[in-house]
Length: 436
Image (cartoon, rainbow, N blue to C red; front, side, top):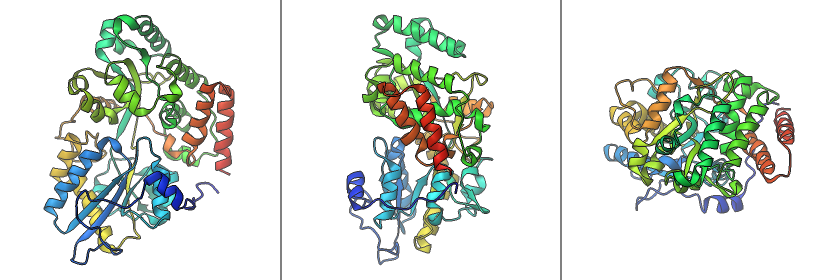
């Protein structure tokens, strides 16, 4: 049966390894509430388990602002992400009895896994303000089971100064051939440009390859519709040759060895410090780049579309994750959770924080008079409003397929253990087996 629910089989040992103890912390001496969400004095405690490390500090700051104006509510935040497996950690949290009151889900397979815990949020102000199409992944039987984080877009982030020094005009790069020519130019001038390589390709991170890189070349065969991918019994790799070509270009012209290169090294050590000319990432990295070099982030980072035949000049844009409310929590905790999410996305104070501090591209109405806070998010917003986008279909793939099957096969390909044809064969077999 398609979309079959997963059962929570990961035990306390896995919990200790992944989370190092999953108890929530409020960041101070405030005691956590009891099982009913109260501390005995009328205080409601909401435990949030979220994965987005890029805005961890800003999110905790927003929580403090909310607590100040809502003294009856205490919100504890646990962030697990980056190099850690959020999905495994969340499963462990539920299995151990440390169920959060608010948590994150991605596409339809995640909804299948946690549907029994996800409260209907269709009556919230945030759900009513959500942009058309942003709730498709979390609709079930007339209910809305999640609220979108934001919109995100990705492509090739490039160093404008390095491109200028190399005589490369980014706006003229539309096709794979033009990108390859630019990369060869950069590679031939490495010493003069002061770079180690054109790319930093973090092949240690399966999600960079199996989620984002692959999505650009799989979106067409699912008509750019996450639900069509979710309903599909198979995947064909109709643009597999293009995918391999783009994959090889990044891997061959990257700092080596790519299998040892992770996300933080890619963004912080190499791109932010001008050691490479390009990285495949999205607007979510802006805060990290800014923390390394504010001037570089503001003035020197551009966004190039991944060249896909027939979709030149477009970037993938979608909703990366959703906030879910645990309906098994006490009624007053469920209500407090919904009120916090409503405040974050629909109050004037919350909306300003979302665009100024989170640097989000909003997934909601009511932000028309607010300025997008950073250049990367402005670029994504421009592509989105102009309709120059591709869909995010990878969230409709079978659970764990993009990383544990496709991403893992791509790593084997880099190691020389299998051919690209075998990458596709293994991935097709894995998809079809999951959907039987």
